[in-house]
Amino acid sequence: MEGVIDRIEGDKAVILVKGGGEMYLPVGSLPAGVREGSVLRFDIKVDRKTEEERRKKVQDLQKRLRGKC
Image (cartoon, rainbow, N blue to C red; front, side, top):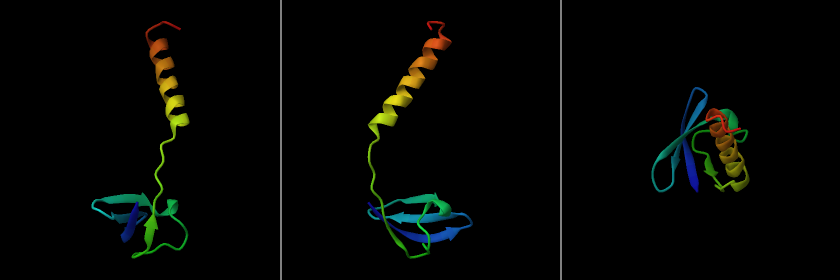
């Protein structure tokens, strides 16, 4: 995925995403030296391990709330 920094509003960068849409990200989470016009590439991955850990935490909480612990 690719995007370009359209503008910086305070501590947020407005990124126009190639193909349509926009994202707002904290400037501090972007690489040093980015500015309006900088082109960014994003690599999006599914984190199955973290997803499963969160699912288990929710299930455990539900069990406790139902008194089945």
